[in-house]
Amino acid sequence: MANESSKGQKMWGGRFAAQPSDIMQSINASIDVDKRMVREDIAGSRAHADMLAEQEIITEADNEAIQGGLDQIVEEVEAGTFPYRVELEDIHMNVEARLKELIGEPAGRLHTARSRNDQVVTDFRLWTRGALTEARRSLKALQRALVQRADEHADAVMPGFTHLQTAQPVTLGHHLLAYVEMIERDRSRMDDCARRLNESPLGSAALAGTGFAIDRDATAEALGFYRPMANSLDAVSARDFALEALSALSIAATHLSRLAEEIVLWTSAQFAFAKLSDAWSTGSSIMPQKRNPDAAELIRAKASLITGQFAALQGAVKALPLAYAKDLQDDKQLTFAAFDTFSLCAASMAGMMETITFNRENMRAAAAKGFSTATDLADWLVRELKMPFRDAHHVTGSLVAKAEEKGCDLPELSLEDMQAVEPRLTNDVFSVLTVEASAMSRQSYGGTSPVRVAEQVEQWTQRLG
Ligand code: ARG
Image (cartoon, rainbow, N blue to C red; front, side, top):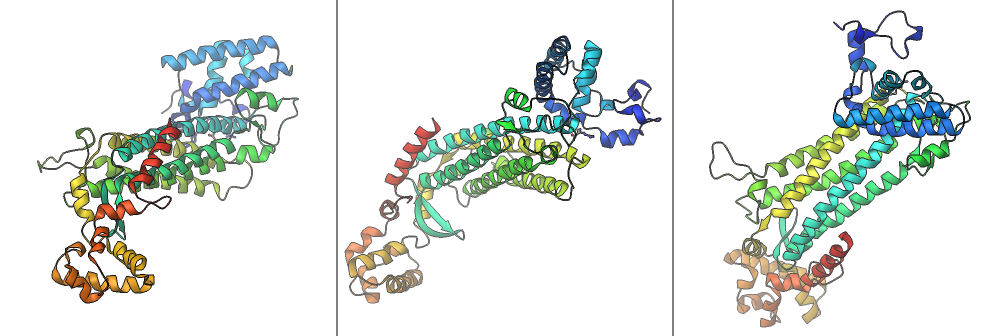
């Protein structure tokens, strides 16, 4: 049972004779989640109060009292002594109630020309803007680690796969830089989102704007927004900025998950391409030989959680008529959780990539299996014998079948065996059948050749600073 003091007069209690039930209070309160926006909430209140004073809607003395009280609240927050109270529902009423305790009457003037509806979404936009900056920074650290590994292994040959079947030799540097490219697009999506969300809802009040002569440009500028949002109904009810942020996180997490899957494969005894450092491996309580890639596996799973958070928020928003509805309160727990999960995943992947080691011999040996240079043979027939590619493809297929029959790889076939299929083949063909020659030859822009990889490494190193 809640005691009397926890059921004191509600800020909105004027029209009510009885208190809400305890369960009503539990489903309604969001303070445990939205207290994370306390700094943003105070920043919003400071900007609003300054503007109210500037517009002579409140007195300068009231503003001074409010700012002084907010200073004190900041100190309490930093010291960990701020009293968050569940019966005050959310962060907005917690801050205002504390302000009232600290400064008395002027606190009651702060909410002039403002509603929790524009207040909460102002806080939330500010919070999301900061979180996107953090997410972009964590991805950059991962990109740096990937570029360093790519630099070390620009010329390390490994099997390139399609359908997870050996396709053609590629270089590890090229493979790792593919993720650097993906992650750069992820970062750019987050940047777009941060720019699009950077408009101020503050001053939209409950939904229709206000009759007070407020200056929305001033509060927008004080909070680092580009401009005030142009439609108050849109401003208080729009959550597409959060959806966009979560979709960007979800896509980025999907990329982390793909890389995580590669780590799981590469570190298996069957592939044995890579080894995670001790700091990023875990043991088994029963099998002493095990080095498990748990962090990679968890990234794979957590990517789905983030995608789920996106879907949950979209579900919450999609059937809401304008303007604000309480459903929107749950936007924050989904968004905070998604950002928390994402930052853990990005930092873990960076940690793994900073310390992973690769076994170049094993990768090279694997690259030589599975007739990986068959395309090079076909290309030789096209170049040297002027064969149409389709015919060359057919001839090479017969050569592969012959090697398979003999239980050997393509370069191990004798010239006689080869000439039995195509008499114009010469010894020269063997020079294109090694995995190094194959990788080296793919010098087209964006190709896997070590020279192209080195160029890309150079560019990325400069770009990432
Ligand atoms: N805690 C609320 C939220 O997060 C603040 C806005 C409440 N507005 C209202 N009219 N009840 O959405």
